[in-house]
Image 1 (cartoon, rainbow, N blue to C red):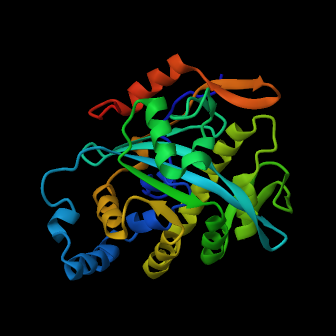
Image 2: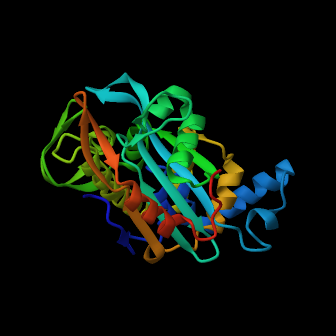
Image 3: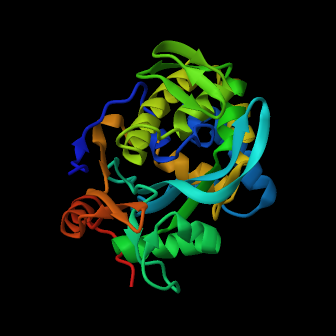
Length: 314
């Protein structure tokens, strides 16, 4: 069975929340240039007159723990230098709890083929179909029903944005562990500088025995590589990368809210993060492959990761 908890996972640079957002590296590169971005965001807030800087930066009481639903949408494919439309399903789904008081974060990856009940739909289905049926609201409702955890914010990213972001960074060094053939490209094993198209292939492919489970693990490794690359950059580069990424997001946060929340969480370190994958096994029904969750073990994980001082969904 897959799904054991991995505690205190170490990342290069103290950018804990970068792991929480699949390739929303730009938005959460706020952690790299906090003070610089603070001045920019402070100006935005004061100009708009929407909220005091003290409130935005958590100048009062410590903030309560918050939960995010992070998802990457398979809304297209990069093949031979052109974009092909995709089916629009949520291929990466991550539930996150971040606590600015204890400076800890917990992350639970939910495989896209996880068999769940989707509210308002007959029977059960793959969890990623909930996005195709009802976009972010239904995906959030489905995750809340499956986990029992109330989601405060959702952040979605079109996978095609990966290409643009990586190209903007000038490429990302990544250790390819095996031959990858995806999106019209073939990548050989070894350390190499990936451009945007190659990066897209790396994070999207699941052509190996463990399928989506291997992809989740590969995405985590690639996020580390991206964070390491972002950490090398001047503050101005990080700021422009953040702006470039923001236009690709689907979220119930606005830019100022995201900046304030990110700044309040910037003290979370990699040593205080816990990551896990929903435990279960591969299950075939009528020729269709699913990830059947071990509900008892999943409930135990959720209790350990999320239920300390958190609101439970009704």
